[in-house]
Image (cartoon, rainbow, N blue to C red; front, side, top):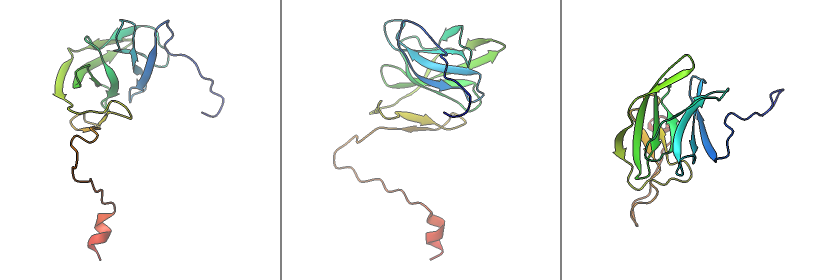
Length: 149
């Protein structure tokens, strides 16, 4: 945070809003709110706020956008990874029907539960340690240089 810009609220209400996710095109923001009495995912214009659209229907958390801003992903209360088509034009959003992609068994909701590839076809799930005594994970970096030796 530097320069002449000053912080400003995008969403203001008497409810708790958290975990904003600005769309890659910079026009929309998904966020969680407990306005209904449980955590749900909403979308509003960014940076202006104003009208909002309820995305989830049975609870939602951890919203992430596909790179083209035409699909939104979130976790439902049963740890299902859910996708919703987003069609935005002008100042309005038309949302598709939320559909479950898969159940994220063992997902750890804290510390970044998942991420999604730019095309929305691959997911990296933070599943923690699902079984005791599992083999350690080894990440080899710069492996082409090792082949030259």
